[in-house]
Length: 165
Image (cartoon, rainbow, N blue to C red):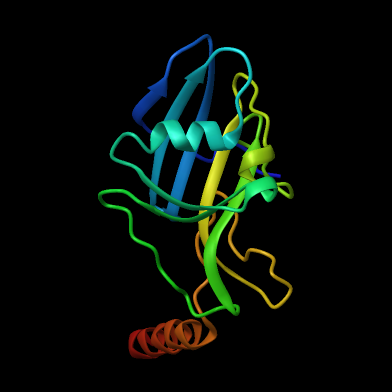
């Protein structure tokens, strides 16, 4: 569990109208995420929020699998860049939910079956997946560099330290 708000900053734009509001974070990378809000009355799903936001500058690319729901393939937003850190067997979007922007859960059912409540938070995190198809990165977390990159950082640090001694 986190110890404070994960996502902070300004809302890029709001879609919909109504008394209820949910916040959606599109998290391309640790310091490259964008917040949107969705307003509605009555009932709404996570997919309803994305479909409404898709009318603005956020492009949502999805595949409709009928009774199995929508599968989000990708997002495109000005300034948003996806990275592959060389870990896992696959890179893609992971879908997380929260009621407080602090404690997040990986959504097992998918965006079409996520019933939104007033004050909810959804986060789409660009991440690599491990061999068990679990996301390596969670909402607001910094990506973990691949092992070769880590070795370069350590070697560089040792060289700098050696020069100072």
